[in-house]
Image (cartoon, rainbow, N blue to C red; front, top):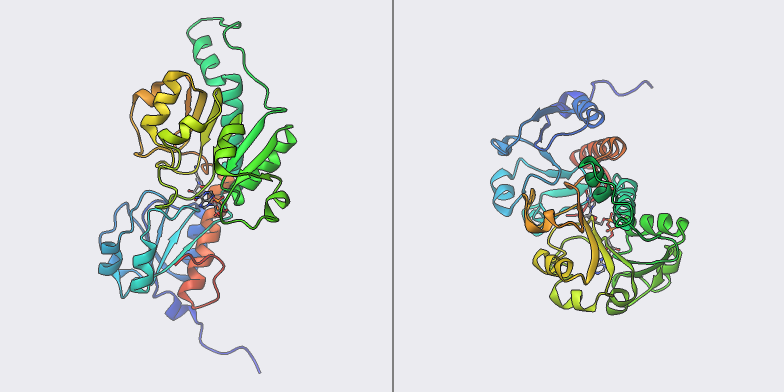
Length: 319
Ligand code: NAD
């Protein structure tokens, strides 16, 4: 017997997919083989689409989901963080949400390391001062990472990838993660620690938790009091985890030797006192902004989205 006659692509091509935050060509190519794909920068007409692909910019609220259902069946996040999508509403309304959680792990871990080294050796400050024609060699004394303690808050994919790289540089890694089994910490290259203990012991503290009601503001005025004086804080996870007013106070008082942020409570933050502080290294949410991570995210989300539309088993369903 030959193959079943009648190509399934006829009904498959009736799927309509909307992309609002852009998608790398690899992902577009996969989607266009099976569906009608439209790109625009807002959600107008979403009720006429079967699936939506977003990154972090588009906010997929309960109102958006309920007005686009029942035709809208799947939302795909080309990346990890799903804090811009109302997962509870999606579950209630029956819209599947999938993401691409493995795509950006290496890029974010590498960017975190770049920020740690920038802080330790004051590279952005040194670069700015040389451009002004100065030669502030004596003032630009830094510290080594080797032999220092790195406290990792959230020992998931990115936290563990950071630990592997930090260990290679001779750092001692400790980690806090209430959702991890005790035996799992050492397997991920960190010594388990309590939250207060981590704040008090670490020379560098790096956050790698999702933004949830539980983690919102988890580094605030009380925590800055507990942080070891002279420590350095890095956040490449999400704005809103670190209370920015308290961070500015900690930098101004000299309690923190420095901080580095890739993410902000409001993006873009504009030229605030925090962003302009000489001991802050700031980047515009570029943790996953590499050729490799964007390509992987586009490829992974395209395949997962088509699997969801086709009723196939899913690898990365979050709602
Ligand atoms: P993950 O799910 O693998 O790891 C998150 C870890 O945080 C988990 O192990 C979880 O148990 C832990 N956690 C949750 N609540 C906690 C709490 N209250 N205290 C301590 N630990 C807690 O996720 P991941 O892939 O490692 O990504 C982490 C975060 O990084 C994402 O949620 C996203 O917000 C952020 N991110 C940022 C960028 C960027 O461009 N800067 C890119 C990708 C991801």
